[in-house]
Figure 1 (cartoon, rainbow, N blue to C red):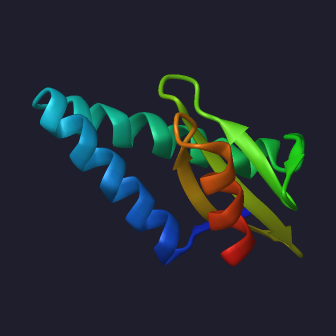
Figure 2 (cartoon, rainbow, N blue to C red; figure 1 turned 90 degrees about the horizontal axis):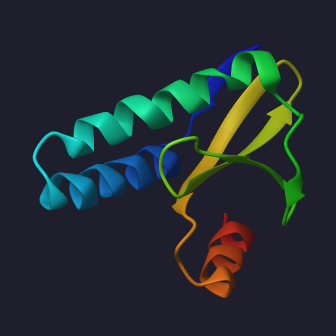
Length: 98
């Protein structure tokens, strides 16, 4: 299964990188490595995650982030990568607008 990260999700990852890099130099890179590893796992484990607002939601193993994705034919589309500490209504609105 092919995994594609949409531009909006890449932007989410960049924002997460900047947030963690400000906290501690090098932590941003660790964040990206961890999240990309989680995203790569979707090529094997696509579709097993619960549906939330119409998207499958994979919870990151190391950071409080969720990867929202859809399966279209033989491709996994990563729609958003959002911080789970955000207000749930903000997350829902962001996903509905996507």
